Amino acid sequence: MSQIQEFEKVLSGSDSSVAAFDEHGKSFVKRAQHFLHSTPAAVPLIVLVLSVIIFGVAIGGRFFSSYTLTLILQQIAIVGILGAAQTLVILTAGIDLSIGVVMVISAVVMGNCAITYGMPTILAVVLGLGAGAVCGMLNGLLVAYMKLPPFIVTLGTWNIVMATNFIYSANETIRDADVDAQAPLLHLFALSFRVGSAVLTAGVIAMVLLVLLLWYVLNHTAWGRHVYAVGDDPEAAKLSGIQTKSVLMAVYTLAGLIAAFAAWVSIGRNGS
Image (cartoon, rainbow, N blue to C red; front, side, top):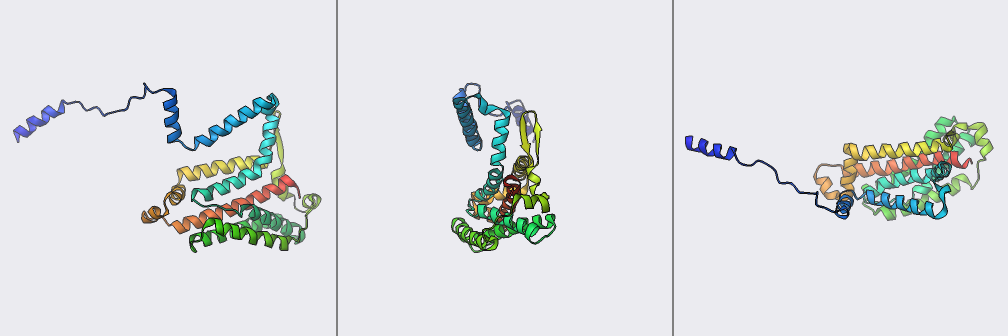
């Protein structure tokens, strides 16, 4: 026993440092390459920023004015919200081709319930959001439980929802003046305020808050990690205990709900 203890004393004086990679000798190109490989989401952001800079320099300095940039934000608010919904589906290795017509029929439901049927505006908004969620739930049911390809499913529901919208709306338009008179709440996201020379609308603020909320949920919650896992390898996710069908149902339903929210924003943006 004493011999073993003497041997351990010798080991106690040995070097205990851990091997480390020396990055001081790396060039800027090598460091940038390592950053892009470790953070692939930064690639489209860098391309977008460079494109904006090149385009702005090419057409002159007026492009970078706060008024112009906030005007662009107002114009892309609806598409940005739909893009957030589409991102959720794409993260599960799927696609939702019906998301645009889901937004349209949700807007029609809100308008008809509030103006044509004379319902309270808040109830009309809830019914419109519910219509979008039901459409998304139908997509999720066919993808998760029927095992049908998302492209085929959403292409089919796109035609079904579009035809339903033509029949239900009878291609009639609800005028801006009628919305203002009977259901001003539908124009909530048209409210604007000025910050210096910049003009922001409630729709732009809603888009930014929605993106930040989804970023937090996807990166800092267990459900967000489950979404990534299902999109990366559904079989491995299932073997690890993740309810892949429930995750897919939740993602498609949430995408439909967000599309219906975009419908509310579009009513404020378009007026009618």
